[in-house]
Length: 295
Length: 297
Image (tube, rainbow over all chains, first blue to last red; front, side, top):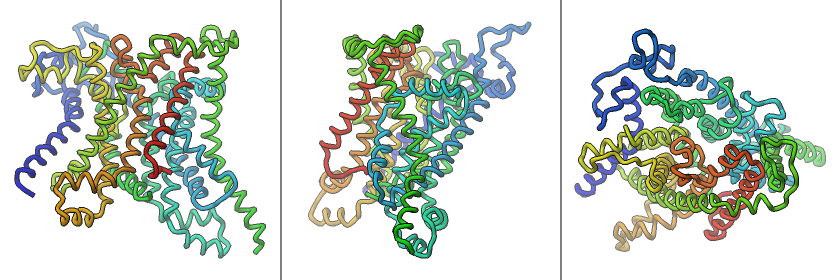
């Protein structure tokens, strides 16, 4: 490869890196600075003062420096919502993990059936499940709210778990069915002849083979649930069940918001996700690649 | 072994095994949609919950003739019209870049997933902060470099607001497209390129005649997926512009939200939702007819 093309490629790679990382870097830098420093026009690119106050506020409620005047009054209103980041994280995790488990258990069983057993109504059922993926969530948001309300499930984790499962199960079933269709059934057939039930065959033979696909499906379900916003917004009136995206949105949409505090909130809310994506990136990419190869 | 008994047991297992999934999905999609259909033919306003007279097609008529309707569809069209080609082209470009044998691409392949991993709301907030009219980094950059002498209120002007929102959307969606294309690129066997080169093909010809045809399937997937996402986007709008200066960044999904929670008119919202569902179905079927063969299922 000629040097010129190499250089251009390197430049492109650097530009790409900047494009991806710039927002993250900027918000990270902003989160460690005192409120006042963010109001410079043009902004100070290199921070002159660094402080942990913003993070301190989220964790302990100690008001950051710039806000206090002498006798304990505040110069500006400070968002109390910011203190809800940790409970929000907890709610998000509970819901996301539950959704992941539901997907893994029910999705796998259903996918296995779709990929192996031909029975009356299997195609319509399959098409139906996949067809629901095309539904715009907003279209069912309000009726959904009414159902949940009449079941008395508003403001619980269960409401969101059900909502998220409704959206993730079709994808999981589609993904796993595609994968399983390409796993040769010879081993299972042998077991079935020996008198093993379908369920046992699934558990002992198929699952060990399908672990990469299962991991990918699990990761997708988890991430979808964690990042979901619309239904979380509708179905969770109080912090008892509010998820992280809702809290973060609440903090940022507030016109009185302290930008430094907002930055700290955002950093805190994306760290678990980024770590997760980094650790499991192989499963994500491999999952997508395997499905593509199965065409 | 009783063949009859075995098949019967297996059939029962089959139905039972898909029951949970079908039940959950059906319950939370069929029922709400039916309810929305029912509601769209009635006048239902939140502060008059017990008075729901049947009014036929009135909701649909009112909604379609409102100014917002046409505006929202136009905006959605422009939005998707910009986002779709950009995501597609950039994704392909990045995939090609990552496919080269340079060592630096290793680190990039790791980083590329990050924008996709964050919630759409976070992307909206991040870029909303960068494009902020008074303190934003983007304005600051242009100012420091000397390109402008006064900050531009990007999110308060109709044209630039839409562009900013699209930008944040593209930033978040490109990684997925890139990975899909990359996966596709890696399934193209090298022999094809070698054969083409032996026949005297240059870089661009190789691309046009070897790469592009083989990526058709992925192209279709990306297009369908991104169109759906483009039409359905809500998170980003809510956080970045709240529907935009004078409704200029209100996509159809945001418009539905407005009808429901500002006008409290559930009948309208339901009618809109239904129109949206039908439109999406028509769109998908249109796509599938246009680009035949390669299919997702």
